[in-house]
Image 1 (cartoon, rainbow, N blue to C red):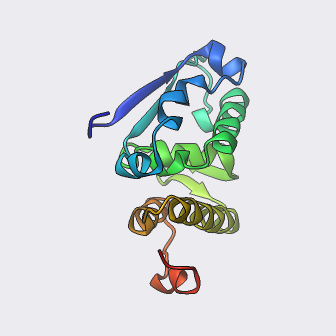
Image 2: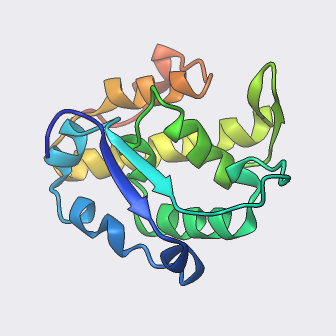
Length: 161
């Protein structure tokens, strides 16, 4: 895989069948390779909506359900999603309560975001340490993209690599 963002198309049939097989190539990567490719995956949903449908993709139940399944099976998924294009924010919006404003974009419920990001930081930090990897800087960047201000002391109480 190159250093450029990688687009992973997800078809309507895969969405309806909750088929996460398009992520198979990514799941076969080692922890070190996943960390190396942090922030580079883009997911493209092939989901046709009527032009008059005002919903954001994160409001479409079928897409949310597919994303919930993918997130459950691949907990490292948010870490590898492209951060600059809004992929990470969209994925988290699939998982958490939020509002959307044309002026302000996605607005997460603060308590939900805090619980989710803290849980994900614990999970991914432990996952990386079990594989003798270190990704705390990338985790901090992931949190920052979501508007979560991570206190540097957060890591102090956790085991070090």
